[in-house]
Image 1 (tube, rainbow, N blue to C red):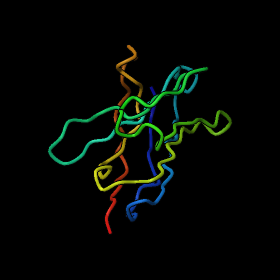
Image 2 (cartoon, rainbow, N blue to C red):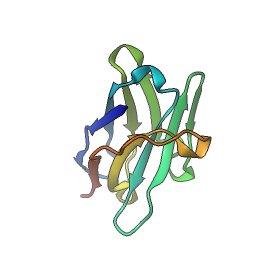
Image 3 (cartoon, rainbow, N blue to C red):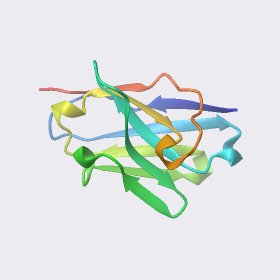
Image 4 (cartoon, one colour):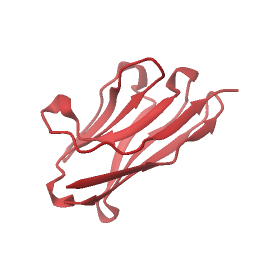
Length: 118
C-alpha cells in the first residue's frame, strides 16, 4: 500500500511560481514512477508531468517549459515546480502513478488547490 499526501498549493498571481510536494509513505520501494495530475472544475483529470528513473517528461503541451517534476529520494518526496503560472493552471493537483505509462494507480490523496488569479 502506498499513501500519498500533496501539499504546497495556494493562491498566486499570474506569472508567479509555486512548488508542490507529494510525500509518499507505505510501500515506497514499489514506486517506480510518479506523476502529477490536475483537475479543473468541470474537466477531466489530466496528467501534466511524470518521472521515472532516468526519465522526466511533461505530458501536457500546455505546461511544457513551465512545469518541472523532480524527486528527492532521501525524503520519498516528489515535487512539481510550476513557473509562469496562468489562470488556466487553476485546478486541484494530485500525485499518483502515471497510468498512461501502464502503471497501476494508487489510492488518490486529497490533492492541493492551486488558484492563479490577480
